Structure formats: C-alpha cells, structure tokens
Amino acid sequence: MEFRASHRYAHMSAFKARRAADLIRGLDVNRALLVLEYDPTRSAAFFIKVLRSAVANAAQNETVDVNRLYVKDARVDQGPLIHGRPRFRSGSMGRMCEIRRRTSHFRIAVAPRKEA
Image 1 (cartoon, rainbow, N blue to C red):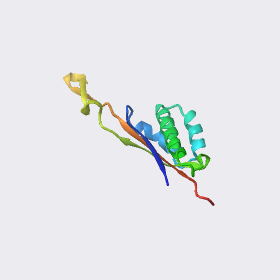
Image 2: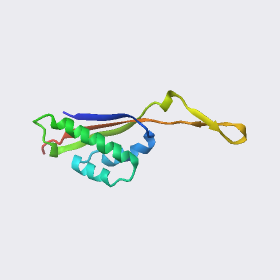
Image 3: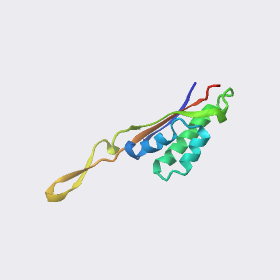
Image 4: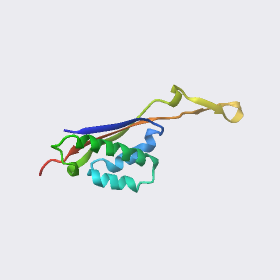
C-alpha cells in the first residue's frame, strides 16, 4: 500500500529539481523532512510541501502508522514549456537565441516499512 502526492507545472527545470529527489529517495519520512529543511536549493521547498501532502494522505487511513513511513519513490518529470513554445531574444551577429521557460512535475510515493 502506498500513498502518493504530486505538484504539477512547477516553474523549475527538472534537471535542477532531481538533485533534491535523489537526496530523499529511500529515507524515512521524518529524516527526509529534516534533510530537505537544510537543503538550500529551491526545489527542496517544493518537495517539503509534496512530502507533507503525501503523509497527510497516509494519515487518512487509521491502520497506517505515520512514524513508520518511508519515501518509496521520489521523482521529477519534465513538464511543458510555459506558453507552450520557446520564446526568442536577440543574439550576437543578428541571430535569435531561444528562451525555454521550463516546468516540471514533482511526484512522491510513501509506504509503511515492512516488519522485520
């Protein structure tokens, strides 16, 4: 049994956000929140919100002990460009340079640890 939460269309490139996902994958939820609190990247703030939402989803089930949850899956997928297309600005020697305003989708799944 796993509980999921996601944040879609975040204004951040997926490449930058995957660093925070790699930090918390496989950790206990309390430990993951502690790691994200002290991570200076902007993506850590997004992951804190999504992780708390996943824990709240798990807390809706009375049979689940929230203190035994761990991060089963944390990933960041690439979303569409803002405005659906690249924009352009002037470049050197009369050329055009692309501006790609990227978005990403944050997804987290938490599950209770199996008894040893």
